[in-house]
Image 1 (cartoon, helix red, strand yellow):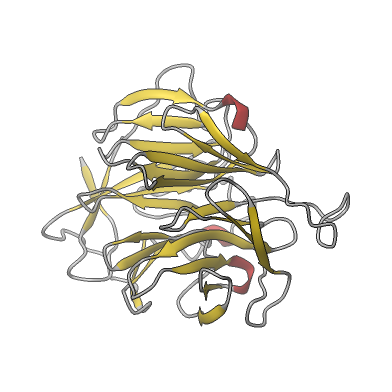
Image 2 (cartoon, rainbow, N blue to C red):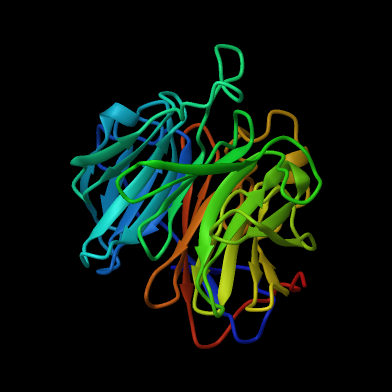
Length: 320
């Protein structure tokens, strides 16, 4: 069964797949913060329960779960194919102030804790990493989105290189750098940072040099996912935004301008939620077919799969 979801461009047709990804008895979500797909289109949902990583096949059948060590702190979730050709997870844990690299089965290969920067961090000024990404050369970038608002740069072995940022709104400064990813669409790689409380994306070189802002059509951007020429951005204020290769608006998906204004948001009564509307998108990814997965910041989790179709059957007015 499918239900139409608002779309904003005739070349992008998406429909909700009802009932995708049912959980088996004994497993439940906490806050669903991240979602990734591997090269076989298996789907991994990252959440704050004792089953922090929950794996489904592309049809939505439960396969496996692991990650008890991330319970309560599961946040940033990045899948990267390293130079050895293998895929790995890079994970940030807000409760334990660390980043770990694991296999797709959960074996920990690398752990990076709080950087030794006494001018920035001490007992009062905490380090709380929210996201991580990896450059083509293997260098690792970690965003301290809930702490002191820096980006920290490491080599592939976890050796510290540099930091930049700090609280502010001027170029190079950040106000809740919640998400981070690598843009490979141009002539050279760039770092895109979801500068959430500044309601913008800030673009840097791989050395941390400020290049430009993307500050239109965003409303508390949480993270970024590059697919083809487009960027998919979960705006926490109740929509998913898609920008094109020139960082211009393609469309907003499932926008609900009333959800985030409700008392008790994001944990609203279940009667409020609509299949074709989002409330608090936090993570997004896209599989090889162009199908979109969205997870939301809700205490018992919410996962939506949007299937790409050739013809739109939507009767909704697009938000563009």
